[in-house]
View 1 (cartoon, rainbow, N blue to C red):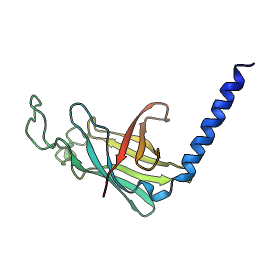
View 2 (spheres, rainbow, N blue to C red):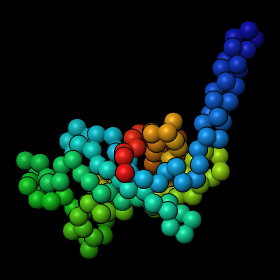
View 3 (cartoon, helix red, strand yellow):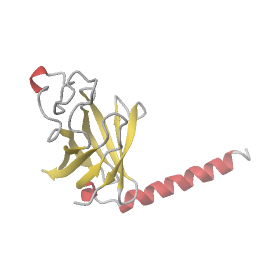
Length: 159
C-alpha cells in the first residue's frame, strides 16, 4: 500500500501539469509554419498550417531534399507522391501536397479528428496534435485508437 501513494501523487501531478498545458493553448496556436523531425534519408520538411471554415489543414511547403537520392530508381528527379494508392495521383509533387486534413480544436488543448497523410507509404492515418510549450507540436498518427501509432515532434518556424 505504501508504494501506491507515491505513484498516485506522481500521476496527479502529471495530470495537473497536462491540464496546465492544455489551458495555455488557444485554437489558432497551430496556425503557421512547422519543421518536421529530420529523417535520415530525406531530411525534414516544412509544413504550413492554416484554418478554413473552422477546421485546420496543412501542406508541405519546403523539403530539405527536393530530389530522390542516388541509388533510388527515380534518382535526381523531383520528389512526387509516388506511393499514393491512386495511380492518377502519383505524379503530384510533394511540395504543395496537403498532408493534414480536417482537424478540430477540442477545447482541451489538442487538435483532433483530423487525418495525416504519409507520402512515404501512401497511407492516411487518424491524427491528434498537441502543443508542448509555444514552439513544439507533438503530432501522433494512428490506426484505430491512439495507442497504435507514432508520434513525431514538429518545431515552429518564423513566418
